[in-house]
Length: 207
Image (cartoon, rainbow, N blue to C red; front, side, top):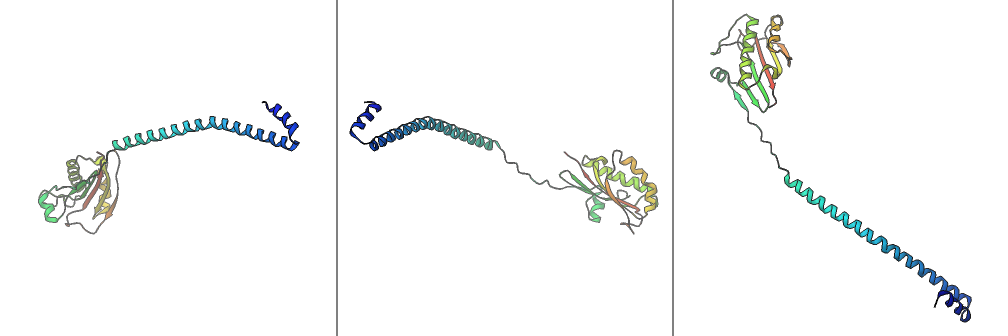
């Protein structure tokens, strides 16, 4: 029986109010069926999208675990100081080491003009004392494989600043590429009265 026939039969048996109620019910049922069909289309699409998202998340997690397993833990071991004595007996008698290197950094104690027995040389000759001092410093640098190009700090202590300034041009032959940082200080005296100049250095060299 069609809806039209049903309504005609109702007109014969029921009031207009009953007819309106039936029509309304059928319209509601029709809309509900339309929504069900719509959700039947949407729900599978949502399920597929959710499944893909979960799959991608699991894959990313697996890749992350693989990458983390490939990472190796690197532990830095502090390098032990490497000491050097240029004149062991003299330096032990005075109680110091001429140089020490830790990693890439090298520190050199103040050098003065002396012979291998620790006796002062070139007394009253500032220029020669300067040359003797740089000669010793060059030996210490060479021991570690450094050169004056690696020097980053130079501190000069002198008992006669005027005499040092007159002879300081010799430094141009020592530092041929660039000069280091540092300070020049005039002092009242050094270890022995004959010493007119003392120079200490710091150097750095990337390995």
